[in-house]
Amino acid sequence: MTVNKKKLPRAIRPAGADAPPAEAMADIATVAKNVSAFDAVATNPEVRRAVAVKLVERLSLWSGAAGLIPVPLVDLAAVGGVQIRMLGGISKIYDIPFSENIGKSLIASLVGSMVPMTSAMGAASIIKSVPLLGTVVSAFAMPAMSAGATYAIGMVFIQHFASGGTLLDFNPRDYREIVKAQKEKWSGRSGA
Image (cartoon, rainbow, N blue to C red; front, top):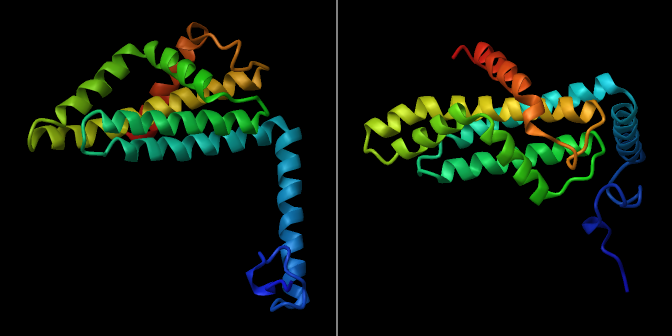
C-alpha cells in the first residue's frame, strides 16, 4: 500500500514531499510558539485574564450581530448560543470543567437577575414582528442590549473563575453589583 504524501497535512508530511526543509522548520517554530503561549496563559493570571477579556469582547460583538437577526425569538436563541460558547471558552482558559447543561442554567439564572435588560431584549425581539417600524427600532436596540448583556455575563464569569470559583459554586446573587457595573461600562464604551 502506498501513501499519497500530498494528501497528508503539512505538519506530518515528510520534509521532502513538496515542502522545503525551511517550511517544515517554520511549521515547527509556529507550533512551539503556540505551545509556549499556551503555557504562559496557563501559569500567568494577568495573561489569562487578558485572553479571557479579549474572548468576551469578541463574542460580545458576535452577540450584537446575532441581535440583528430579523426573525423574532430566533435572535434570542442565537445570542444564547453565543453566550454558551463564551462561557465554554472562559472555562477552558481558566481550566474549569465545562458542562453545557450547567452553563445554560447558570446563564439563565444570571440573565434572570438582569430582569430590566432581559425584558427589554425580549420586547425588542418581539417588536421585530411589527412590519417596517418594528424592524427599524429593534435593529438599533437589540444589538446593543445583546452585546451589553453578553459582556456583563462574560466579565462576571471571569471574576468568578479568577477568584477560584467553578461552575458548581456559582451564585448569581453574589454578582449583582458586578453585573450592574459591567453593563454601565459597556454602555460607556458603546456610546449608548
